[in-house]
Structures are given as structure tokens and as C-alpha cells.
Image 1 (cartoon, helix red, strand yellow):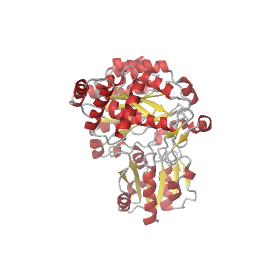
Image 2 (cartoon, one colour):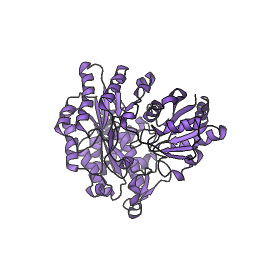
Image 3 (cartoon, one colour):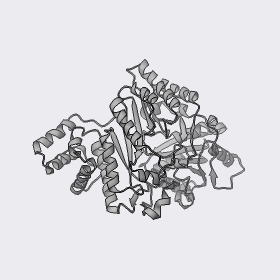
Image 4 (tube, one colour):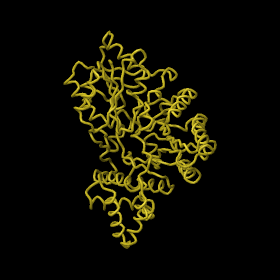
Length: 490
């Protein structure tokens, strides 16, 4: 073997679609190429040892916002113990502002942008000459028809134990400044018949959970309907063999034809990730986000009332121009629409995104290290931003966990944001913790808090018991970190 493709995934269940694309497109070098994935949190020495056990001449690393710090340690150690091994980097985290990054300084080569064509070409030059003189190589974007699809490279073990990521298209036509997709010119679809043939093969091999990473699944309704019909046919042919599909939807684009298709799916078959991000029109304009808020709200309400889809809806705190008060108003508006989950995100400065143009005027201050979370801005000071961060963590534990279905409405009352912020402040003051809170302790703390608000002890404990006695963790994961491209160099 000459070439090893590797990355550090956030979890074992996250199989890297990007590495499989590279392997599928290695051409004559494919027989000399292997793929090995790791998980963040593993010992650096063990990762390096396992890499070198393959005796590779080239190691290609996929670098993302969630793994860049640990990957830097891996590359540094690898170059110390095996300086002859050529290190090639790619991925969204190193495709922009690369000159200032330590991991880029340590590596031999860097591919920015698409890696499907450029990575195998670079490897061929490294192995066979002439040796490339330039360290940084801009990735070439080939016609979509020339990209070999990678789905046959999911192993039987992947299909049995891991999330199967798929994409019917790449790119996004929208220009939201906080998102890496703002840098795309448009969305590029794969040939639909070829794609569905690959999905048929995966299904035949036993795949039942398909997570689409398309930025705008419902952009082309004809394509959306054909893909949804594929899954509906599987469900109707064998109702006792469920299939689950996850899609990301544009919130204000849900025509009647798509509604009709969605309404045919049973419980447990569809999950929609819906990015609202903000209901504030002034903030939306400021960050170049085009969204009809009324249509978006109406569509979420329709999905709640007339479909069996599980809805995971996103809001982002810390956007320029968004005050705590305006965010609270948007949060309460979304809560009233009754989605299954509200993903309370905190703004991050992804490298290359245009959000930085607002830095001076709106006083944006971000962490200097990944994941570059916002610390403060003109309208939200540092202590208040930390309260929002804790709110987001506790919201996941209490609301999004699905374990407090009866208790949550009582806890939130008529002002969801204000009530939960008060609970969040109290919980932090009484635990000094945001992580590793055991479920039993959390239940006890919620009961105690309800008592501080005037509820009788017996009533509070009975309310919690109605949830806790039969509570189970949700079977379906929330999405992987969003807006991180899937290719080695993307």
C-alpha cells in the first residue's frame, strides 16, 4: 500500500463520506490506497502507530472544525517519528486562511476546494514524479458526471453499525454569511438515476438509515419527489422493514406536491432538519439570508399538524444585530410552532465565511481556537453569551432529550425562553456544571426547581415520575456538525 486516507470523526457512528469519495476516484491508484478512520479522543500515539502499521508513503488527512486540534497533534507526531511519510491535507477547515494554521505548516501539501480529481493527481506526481513544487493546490471541480459515486465502499460493518451519509447534490444557491455554503455558486445535482441505483444497492445490502447531507433537498421538487418515492416504495413493499431518511429542508419552500408526498410517510420514517436561524428580518438582511418568515412558520405548522415527520429546527444565537430580546422573541415563536426539537446553536466563525465583514461594526469576538464560537458582540456581552451557551446545553439535556415530555410545558409556561433561561441560571448556580449531569440528578434538580416556583413537592415529583419512569433516549442522532463539507478538500 502506498496511500492511506484518514480522518478523526466526531463519533464512531459517523462514517466519512468524503474519504470514500476520494477512494472511489483514485483511478489507477485505488489498489494502492486504503482507508482508516479514527475518533476524536483517541490517544495520539496510538493513532500514529496504527497509521504507520500500514507503511504508507502518503497519508491524506480530512481536516474539519471538530478535529483540527487533535489532527494537528497527530500530524506533528507523525512527521517527527516518520518524516519520510508525505502528509497531504484537505477539508473545509484548512481550505481557507491556511497560511496562519500550524497544521498546514507541518504538512507537505494542501488541497483547497474539491479533492475528487486533484488528490489522485497529486498523489501520482508524488509517487511517480515529477515532484510537485507548490505546497498548496487549488482543487479542480470536475463535471458531476465524472465523479464516481462512493456508496459501494461502505462496508457491511458500516451498514450495520454506522450512519450512512449520502448526497444527491452538492453546493447551495443561498448566500447566508455564517455558512460555508455561502461560497458556493449554486447547487450541482448528481444524475438522479445513477444515484437512485446506488441507493437501491445500499438498501439491498441492508442499509435502513440514510442521512442526506444535501444543503437544499427541496430546492428541485421533482427530484425531491422521486427520491422520497424511492423510500416510500420500500416502506409500502415491506411495512415491517422500516426505512429512515433524514433531509435538510429550505423552510419557506413547501409546495402542495411535496406536502402530498410527505403526508404519505408513516411515523418514524422521515426527519427534517429545518434551518430557521433567525426570525429577525433585519438580521436576515444583514447576513444575506433570504427567507419568507411567514411561509416558513406556516410550513413548520403544517408539518406539525399534517405529517408524521420528526422536525429538528435550528436557531443561531450571536448573529450580528441579534439582541437577546429579539432572539427570545424568535425562540418563543418557534416554540409555539411545536417542532420536536429546537437546536439552539451558538454562532461560530467558520474559516472563509463572509460573516467576518461585520466584525468591527458589530464588535464580533470569537474564540481563537476551534470551534471559534462567538464570545461577545456589540449587543451581547461575554457573561450574557455564556448564559446563552449554558441555555443551549441544558436545552439539549431537558428539551431535546425527549425525556421530559410532560414536565417541559409546565417548566416553560407562557414564556418559553424567559422561563428556561431562569431555570438555566438556577441550575448552573446549583450544580456549577453543564456536562456529566447524571439523569437521576437532573430529574431531582428539575423537581427541586419546580418547588422553588411554588409547586408542591408531591406534585413536582409525580410530574417528573410520569416522564422519568418510561423515558428512553431518542433512537435517532441529531445531525453531525453542520455546514462542514464532506470531501477531503471541500
